[in-house]
Image 1 (cartoon, rainbow, N blue to C red):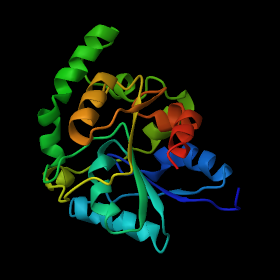
Image 2: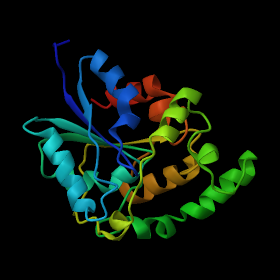
Image 3: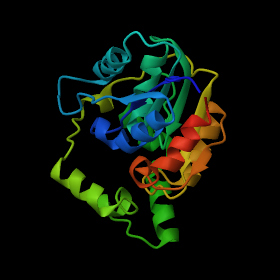
Image 4: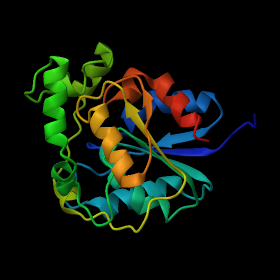
Length: 226
């Protein structure tokens, strides 16, 4: 192994906190990868999808052969980035997968996410009433949940109205789905990945925040794409 291997840029989802990737970043760096995440301007109502993409591009700087890894709503940022930087591959993790021109606000109804959420909740025996502890934190260690509660990450609505303007996804594209994701249930992620990008997801343990609950397993899956 070289002292430093391929660059991996990890894009956060709603709330834009790089911290959500910190365990995966540490794991990948220990393997020799140039892994890094960036904070997005999610709390600024003047910043939308183009500003998010600009932030990622700036964080990448002059790196080449970059693998973009996008979590959740980061799936709407990745398409605006990958054609602007020397990208090796794109990896989507529990991600919203847009079609060209779609907005994040349109995505939910377009893929039937609410219906899928309710179906999975009824089958899984947990509440259909939305609650962070039920849908995000159910498998995250208590100390990490406490940290998140002490450091909230507001998300303005601006991004939900911005069209994701791109033409195609790259051929080097991998979809990773959490086996126990309650926000985007596995059945939903499989259907959307097949219909929209023609991919069968790689399934890893963990819920929507698998980067916090199963960081080693998620890092394994990311590293396997390189």
